Length: 366
Image: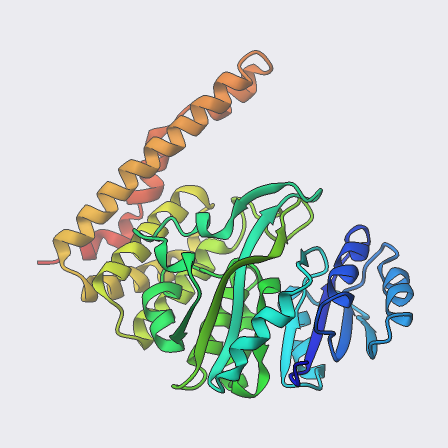
């Protein structure tokens, strides 16, 4: 029997329909949690009643903490972390679920006193539990996914520099256990400034909190990451703040760390792709200029230009193919829709390379 005690934080907002499955996957763990903190963010369904029903008969100490006003996902995370009584904690999102040996498996990593974050691979499923993809399929930026096909430990700084600097390689918080005493909250609290990418920035700061911090990964697919229309992932749209937030994270990383040139190129590709998809806000101009200026100091000018041109071309092909598919699909339904979906490469190119005010000085640099 493990002597490691785990506090479980369950952030919830209108997820009553998922709670039976969530509680069953927590309360029937081979290693029982030491406490459960159920945080309700002003749900309008019967979430609190269901939570009380399950927790009252669980035999596990618990607290149900309702908010008086809606606070959002990451504020809920911080509240839960502040409330936990034990060394290890698990942010078990209310709509996800897991295998019953999840805690037993991930806790073993903490035999190493420097491990701050232990996580496993996730299965991405729909609201009915049907498999979509594995999270390894989301790591398309990396030339090799082989490292995620076996268990590993890594130094936190190394993990950030070589992997988390490019993208969030841990797509779901429910797949992670944390060691609270190795978190530097002076660093971590800044994740509250994000609406979409706060999880990614939280993981980065957790690993960078102290030089000795480590990450542990288990290839076993013990977590089920549920994607549905009501989830944060499902609600993302072209008007989301993703582009702004990824720029902020990249600027922070470029200023703070010595990143490999290959990773900086991958980051630039990610920005070009994001520009093609997400709506551009004039307020992003200064951030984009700062980011591109930093990149130009880190990689040769010809690689900078070639990356933008090549990635822009590839992304344009994808966008036009998707637009044509949608146009063909709805051709008979609406002439107006046909016009809206008509491929418009000129518009895309203006978005990508038409930030003339931003790029002019950089592109004309001698």
